[in-house]
View 1 (tube, rainbow, N blue to C red):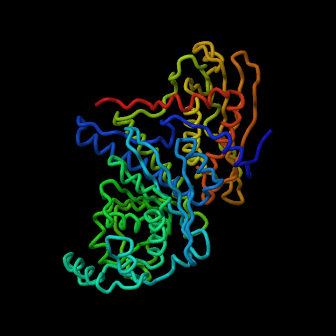
View 2 (view 1 turned 45 degrees about the vertical axis):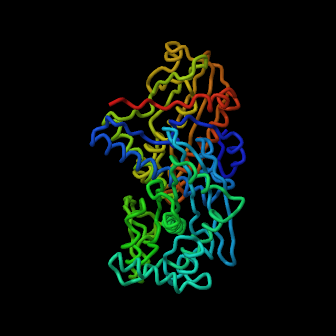
View 3 (view 1 turned 135 degrees about the vertical axis):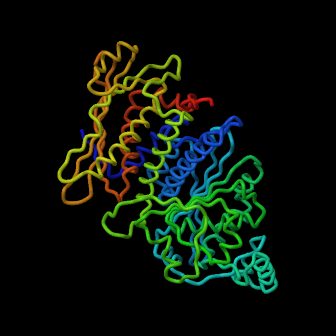
Length: 493
């Protein structure tokens, strides 16, 4: 019976699966070695950047729906337990989520993801055009300098001295609305007696901090990152990754503070928001490294939606994986794995090859299906400690006999298109049998999607629902997930 997924997130959260660290969002990235050549080190850095961007996109998306979003369930399944936070002061309300994880090398990783514009008052903050003076080494000083706390005349004189040393007579200034959100966030993160997230991070000398967000959330992450450096946090342990974020400050702010922050600004070719403030007011300047995704026009030229960044991030990530595999510095998910002695072998039989049932033009969907099938199949690979992949026209029962498998899982991925609009259905059919051909379960899960709705989110949903079915038939899987946290081996160089 086909299940059209319109809700059901409680089911997904209940059966959320802890996957091995080698799944699509592993807890870490490629490690460096003293023996790495300059070229190998560069390739690893390129892969790590693509990995960090994809992870940050999912974390940024999770901040919009922290209570019941598929992104939170997905991250939870990969070992990241994010906690939502909300703080209000007058008309300003800030939403963000926090989590602590660990890299592949065992290095602690702290993450703060700020929500973007989701309410009318958020958009109002986006379009406040006023600026406030930036400076200070404590939260009180920054608020006095910005004029949000009484006093500040003497403090602003010190800002003038700093600006002069940097070769400018203009005071560094930042967007008033973005600064209000950043200050409110910092008040909770630094001044709350009961909140010790940043204090814990600061106390772990080998830990790193990732700040991320989309749109308004990205602007807040940028200012928070700069403020933390002012407050004495090590800039070498802080990274900021933003998506479609507008500029936060003037030319003097960029000149004085731009180079010290490890900032990656992800933009796309159809998103005007990152350029709107400097285009309209001309007193805003972007800084940091720009990573620009090429996105085709969809319904209009206003392609600011985070889901477009998410799908492009997956494509960018797979490109980096393929390059790293070609260079011999990592291995992609294998088609055969034995990592748990004593556990059964599962033959995964993949039928077809990303079938697209056309009802009109579907070239873009065919391209998307190649990525999504790869994503979903890797999720299945991550689920089982021992598996063998066979594809049509190979006989799956011959593989069962050859590899002494106990189960056969038949999978079929396909898309049903609609000639009248960009909506289409992503469907995963799965049939689980024992080695003798006895049927254990059978069903399909489908999700309506489109470029603006987020294709990767649809893939996450159908994958989670189908995996929950497998857990009911093979409950031992959930017990194994935390035990067998193995990653495809990195080749020695």
